[in-house]
Amino acid sequence: MQYLQRSRPHEYAGVRGPRPRPPWRELQRRDPIQFFRLQASRAFAISHSARDVGRTVRSSKRKFDWRFSLGPRGSEKVVELYISVVSGKRLLMYDGVEILNITSSKDKLHHEWRIDGAHTCKLAAVYDSFELSIDTVPFHQLPQRQTCTAAEADRLDARSSETAQRMAAAATTPPPPTEEDLEQLAKCVMYADARCTRENALKFLAKRNFDPEQAAQAYTAMRD
Image (cartoon, rainbow, N blue to C red; front, side, top):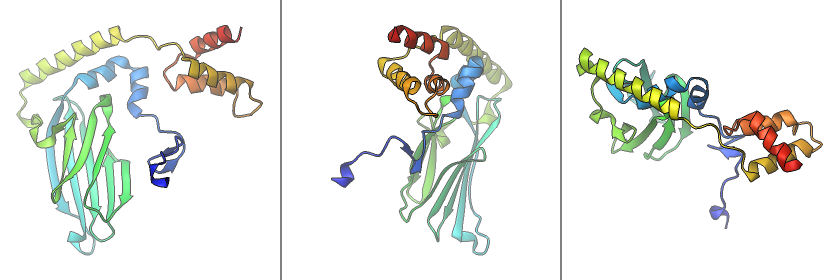
């Protein structure tokens, strides 16, 4: 039956094309210590507000925003949600970047995404309002940044730095390509298609956290 068919792998969030690469992945590869420092830092609540922002009729559009930081001294992060009462449009943004843009007549909204340090944000409708959770902790239960003392901030920063150093040192090297990846690499190399070049094949593996040189050596060994 049609409603039992799974979505195609090249379709993501209703948009054709490959699944977008999470921004924190690049930081993990470029600066693992900074990535693990963010990952080891807990979220601190700064403020939350909800107000009417319609141009003509103020109550026709609502804006919700949540402000927080990762760590007691981290930079301020902002989650914004715009709700149009008339059109049903819902616009979700994180630090000025669009995360979700849908139009629905239903009151239900549930969306989950990853932010800096691979922390998980989840926004869900609760009665006539919305609740933001960070790493499964509701926003109103997060520690308040304003009440964190300097001594406590120093202790938390030192602990997150120590954890980052330990996790970065223990990070394993990229695993060797699987048979499935090598098969895809072989197809890309052998196909007489301008898009399936050896360079693109290596990029294919690199995007999956495989070292291109190691992948090439593994492919050569398999071919020989």
